[in-house]
Image 1 (cartoon, rainbow, N blue to C red):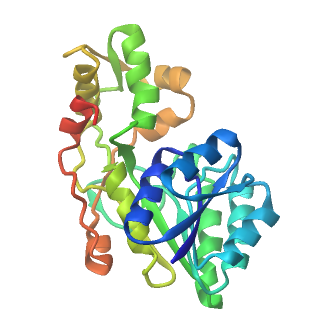
Image 2 (image 1 turned 120 degrees about the vertical axis):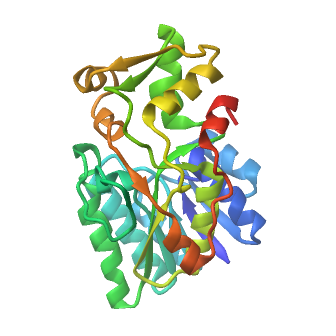
Length: 286
């Protein structure tokens, strides 16, 4: 299939772009600047110059494609919805795969799936009206699907390194919030990339949690990051208030206690995560 991809030069985007090409698809990828264009081009995609605010570019690229995968992170819910609308208008009855996230479920009180109620922290509360609007297209002949990745790790390890590894190396101890007993719903970047590819064949209106099914505690993750940084055993507890001061509003998301299952993706799409030892990967930095 001919795919139009946004966010293709990013952490998740590069993995997804590579997975699409391995599966035999051709890809046009949105590129907001020369560096992004060079990145997607070097991976084998055709760059399309523009950003999420360039609605005409998005619409035209989607109209040329047979399917769309939207990975790029918008600044606001309004921007994300406008971009999604432009691309859904362009793709018409072709598959449109939209990116959400598992943080919208809040604390899960045990293992849950896509039917769990939403209880998002403020940092992701904007996602609800966007995903509702995207999925409504299924009633109008569209083929929307939402993929909700957990906290990504592996490779560049973007968020975990930014908020834990980098400040940990600078301070000589990797942080965790409160007692660190809350669980993180992790997913390897290469596994979630294959879920996006599989979602191109999903039933319209479907929602898939993208997690590895292994949910270590936040403190266990911090200890693994510390070991990777040569700070074996050197971790430090932050109160949630202090974490908010250091990390900003994303601290409330990192403090969530989440356990989710990838069972629906396995049952409906045959998607089985291959990476089941996230702590080993965090230690090894792979």
